[in-house]
Image (cartoon, rainbow, N blue to C red; front, side):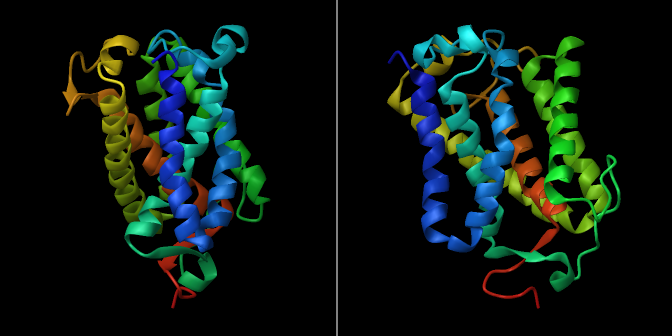
Length: 246
């Protein structure tokens, strides 16, 4: 198959599509995270071709640094990584005041009264800058991305300690779902990881059921960040689904 990344991106849209249909209460969160994820599509220029070398529609990665596939991928990943914890544990976003969660302290120049999207944009910009700086310093790009996501999410947990358990569980669930999607991908396109992915630098030749451990690690970091970040930025906690957090 000549467009493996397109297939992978479409697969990553499926869980979010199911959650969208099954949990209408999570749709506002999914919309916010889809929008927040878009800047990360442009980070493909850091990954291609150093980490992998798939073929892109219209050769856009060679022309502008990222492709249509990247947009689909980050939207799909944000859709399930930000909601899988809520789905599995029957939780829903509730205002912090309703749940009794502490208000966010003023991190990164955005105080508790700051506009939510300003808070979100500040963290996104700093995380992207940190990942780029780590990659420029010679840290392998995937590990730079995971380190930036995890570090900033951990800092947000310092402001909202009620998000620690949801973040950790969201990380594990996202990694499991990420692995499952990669296994489906590998079954549909045999040998794709061997052909398209570059050998890991820190985990050479290491795989879980044939999927590079690097990818599982990325799913873990994405799940942690996507569970913690929107709750901090938009001022909600995770209460029982169908309740007001009582």
